[in-house]
Image (cartoon, rainbow, N blue to C red; front, side, top):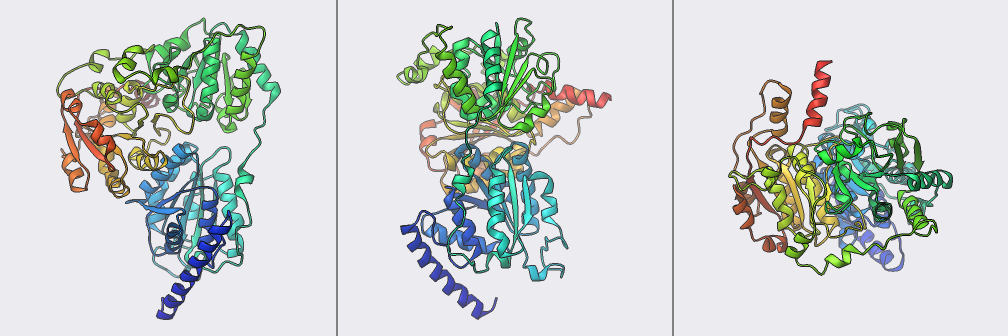
Amino acid sequence: MTELDHELDQKLDRKLDQELEKGAATQAVPTIGPKMADLLVAYLDQLGVEYVFGVPGGAIEPLYDALARSERRGGVRAVVARHETGAAFMADGYARNSGKLGVCCSTTGPGATNMITGVASAYENNVPMLVITAQTAISTFGKGAIQDSSCTGVNTVGLYQHCTRYNTLISHIDQFEHKLAAAIMSALGSPAGPAHISIPRDVMAMPTPISQANYQLGSLLDRPELIDEKAVGKLYKEIIQAQKPVFIVGDEASNAIVSILSLATAIDAEILVTPHGKGLVSPYHPLFKGVIGFAGHASAKRLLADPEVDLVVAIGARFGEFSSNAWDTTNLLNGKLIHVESTEANLTRTPMAKLHVRGCLETIFSHLDHKYHHDPKFTIKAVSDDAEQTHDLNEQEFSASLSMHFECDDIDSYYSNAIPIKPQRLMHDLPKLFPPHTRYLADSGNSFAWGTHYLHPFDRRLAGMRGHGGLFSASMDFASMGWAIGSAVGTSLATADTPVVCITGDGSWLMSGQEITVAVEEKLTIVFVILNDSAYGMVRHGQSLTGAEPIANTLASVDFAAMANAMGAPGHIIRSPEDLNCLDIKTICNRKGPTVLDVRIDQNEAPPIALRTNVLKINHAK
């Protein structure tokens, strides 16, 4: 860039700031200045997006210039990750817990390729995300420019083809607005997922020929809550005729959970959850019988096998390997099943179901709940508001007033005082230490298995948790190590004044632990709980359980508490239940910044991963 170019850029920036400040004060959609990147940021503002997660670089710099101008006027701002995969994980966590579009960005070349793992994870989990990558200037395509990622170089648009819902290069400013709108609508469509736009540097920095955004995306995205009255009528008939119904709740049932639990309580339907749906139902609900599938509970499996169960209603459940009991056609995927879905693609996994119901889950179950409670054929028992009642209890009274109605595998280890601390006991104690509204994230590997089976947050809201996300989150379909670390940052930014506990392994931390410095910089109350066994734990135990060679599963012994202190966060080594319970949790939760617990767990304890190892054994035998 010449000195004259730099001077002209500065003048344009000053003029743009003045116009945007004037527009922000007088219009809902700010007046757009002379650069295309500002048009992009204006659309994010229009959608209420607060953050763009990414790592800067030369080719993406026009977007960061626009974000700097946006931040000065109080609009969307940049959150700088330490690795582009972490940026995508942060956008994932933000989207899940805010109900808004997650946005991540990278520069060209390795920035774009680094981000693919996080984007693929969001794709597998239907997380709405706008993915922005840069390209070198169009005039340099095919000339050997540094980090050329066009079709004549490392073709990043081609690389993103199979992990996005929409994927395009914006090569001219006349394409910019309608392709951006198409990407956003695709990301928030059905199924939701990442939409990728790749923009050359010179296109982002070009003057825009329009003065303000042409599209009001909010109205385009405000879909009517249609209902298939015929199918819902059949579902209602099946429910009221069932002698022993069971509801299975998946993670996509989040917005409908209040009506689902109200209906289940009214008809005495026992409740199960998929591993991803675990955080939506209080583990102390009297009808809750546990988690099905990976790391699930024997009581859940036994309920599905009960010959008296004559109806199974699955709601927002994707039925992949982990949530279907490894495609269990005996007790689950059979003629007793009714599958209710908002994401139609999920229905392809249950062709054997007796009924498929499509539509907005919140609308469907609100309709069913209202119809049942006003049906003169039934005398509806009064349902007390458990949430309001329990708010008056202190922690000790609350704990004593509730009990679990499902079974954990190893109850002795769950209460064990042994040293080193057993992972089961750690999961038992965490909810007792942290406030009831704490959000928990479990990383890929043993963290997910221990958390799914043994972590039972003291959710006081037995009637259901309104809003986005639940108290427990995981991402096991793509199973990216380190997902929870980055996602905890996005979760914390989306849920202000809520403690976030990230349960991760030492293997994951060595991959992605640098993102703690983002939490330090952003002053986020996140507690990173590292299960430190100096191993790739799931690999080691999986090898043992399947009879494989015990190879390549060990890690060097690391003092993660010392690492945390060096990065600006307090670190504590936990060897025993006493060490854990001596922590000043109130101070930790009031601290504007992260804390690390380096938990030296009993490495000989095998996690509840039999479902996965059985699948590996079957595939090996074939």
